[in-house]
Amino acid sequence: MTKLSENDNGILNEILKRLDMLIWMHSEILNAIKDVNTNKKVLKSIDAITLIEMPPDLRKTMMAMMELETATVEEVSIKTGRSVSIEAYCLEHLCKDGYLVKKNGERIIFS
Image (cartoon, rainbow, N blue to C red):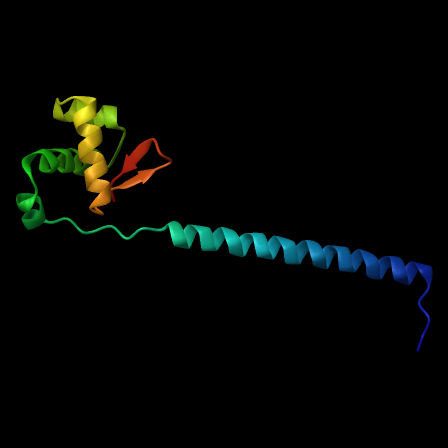
């Protein structure tokens, strides 16, 4: 077997450090992708029949969200003319039913 010089050992150690860093980065990226995929929620589709079958309060909120697309509770409240607490309840209910997604705990997004 050939003996490696100090320079060769240094180069190999540097390569190993970089490989370890690449493996770590790859692992982090895979974990981030896994987190995104597990947090992804498939929304229910909404059509005229579904809207008609909804209770009037939820229907009004849903129609406001369809028009606004992305909104805070306050923005929906202004659009519907109802109190923030009523809209917060309706938006939470629509999220639980799978029609809306709550993003970052502050904004509710309709897709």
